[in-house]
Each structure stands twice: as structure tokens, then as C-alpha cells.
Length: 129
Ligand SMILES: [Zn+2]
Image (tube, rainbow, N blue to C red; front, side, top):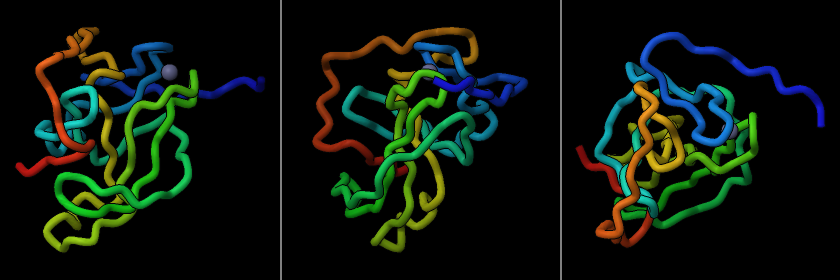
């Protein structure tokens, strides 16, 4: 395995809970009102240190979207997804934006999101502000 060069962020940031690679800044959060299979998810304007998977069409709570999964480059774990395209024009603001699953990342204070068994969302997505 080759050496991975990671980008380091400064400020209030979210990082991979497995390898602590920096992923995104709190100031780049667009919305915290998204949901995924594991509970809360945050919509970021940009993230770093991720690689993307294959494009796929996914039916989410707010309609059909073309998305790619995003993976931490430090350890390869799935951390969220990126919206490539949204069919519904009201969802276009998500295009090119990133979701980080709160359960998969450490918060600015090093906190870990506590998984709630009560959360049973139908799909993974949502996010109407
Ligand atoms: Zn990682």
C-alpha cells in the first residue's frame, strides 16, 4: 500500500472515526437536517480526503438522485455520499455537495455520535431544511 498524503484542515472539523483523517469543516456545513441509515447526516459544501465510488441512481426520501459513495482515503471506510445530480428541481441545490454520516465521523470536540435505535428512516437521504 502506498503512502497516503492527507490534507490537514484547521478549525472546527469533522474527522474519520477510524483513522482521524480530516474530512470537513463545521463552517462548510450547509444543513444538519439530513438522515441516513444510521441516523443523522450532515450536508457539506466540500470535504477533503475522500475517494468516490461508482455512480448510481438511488431513490431517496426526496426523490431520485444520482449519487456516488465517498470513502475515507486514510482507511477506506465508507463515510457518506456525494450528490452528482438530482431530478427534482427543488433538490438541485444538493448537486456537487457531500453527505457525511454523523455516525461515521468524529465531531469538532472529538465526540462520537451515539447511535439511536429509534431512528428508522425509510431510505438514506432526506434533508428538507
Ligand atoms: Zn479513515
